[in-house]
Length: 242
Image (cartoon, rainbow, N blue to C red; front, side, top):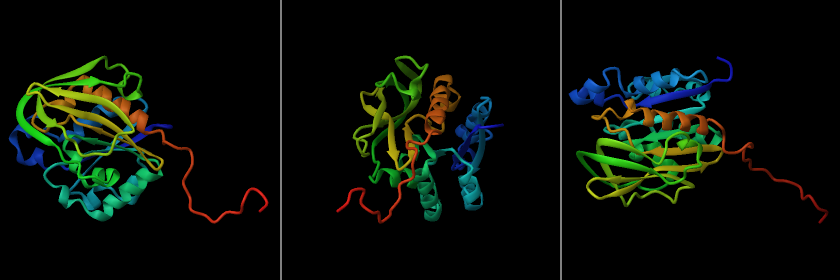
């Protein structure tokens, strides 16, 4: 497919093997569901990669051929090799988009691009969430409307220890009373980074049409580098005579 956006959907892939509730919703894994709806689009080509593959499925060739990388992890953040994280980080600086879901707030790669603890409050009782769009003109929320409502999900609450976002897209309200900055954008080097809170493993979040729409919008947004130049370090001559 000429000029298709090349996406690598990365998933830890452990919950689907160990939790019956997750296995029932995502028998082939969350990554398979995400890749399937991405591949249904004529301008996107998606592949998958998981933690237990050699080099976590993120070889130099795979990363070189990836325009946007999506990331889901939870129980095995510590098993991700630092060398792979460094390579992913460099690709982001070089212009690759990065989309982190839900518990990937604690992933090594998201903490590396933010430089903070990324800690938060949480509660898992399946309460209702409304994700309110607070920047309606942003490409990520094209076609979404005022809010997305999820009937059952895990709560994440403030304070969310991340840097002030370059763009704040969603703020969530939960039935228990908490709020959360659930859609935040960062520009790192030439790359675009988006953290999107939904994606708990025991609820069919990635099968929700509005969530899928946000992911599709984000992939198309993040595939365009945030800068048309590569930063360089060089000793230069003055433009004026000194």
